[in-house]
Image (cartoon, rainbow, N blue to C red):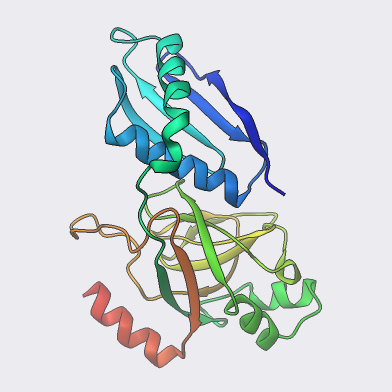
Length: 234
């Protein structure tokens, strides 16, 4: 059931930003509207607005307080509501992400299996059985928040986060799964690692995917991991 608000709720966030909320929960219909409104506003930024940042169910609009006001931005956003269905957004792609599960690449795979009363093979089979919708990209460049994790794999975060996870680590936290694009701290349960370089700022397209795309995980053996890693990271 859709949780779209009848009218967007606009909140002031400091002295240089407002948040426009379109729904109360993580919901595909809400996220589609967020993406459509982001595309519409980015195509022709309202006067004084410097950036439009989409999230799960809201947009953040960063603005110059010397050039516009929250009231004026709110009026502009509400006026463009009528046109959001005509917004041109990129057609979703399915991006395959190879993953080597378990062992040194997925030290928490057994934890996820044990907590959910599954075998390691069942965890891998379930995790690779669906395409995950990318709701948003944030936290770190290229870190995508994915929806659609099977309830059988829902697992709490680690009580003690690790201080450093290798780039490409694939993890589970509660009802979400995702990938760490760079070496970073993290508290997710790590079940595998991809050899793909998820974020490279020097590429024409720095990210392999964008919000609205779908991620499909594909299990690979360690030998294939090493081969892809050598090509991508040399």
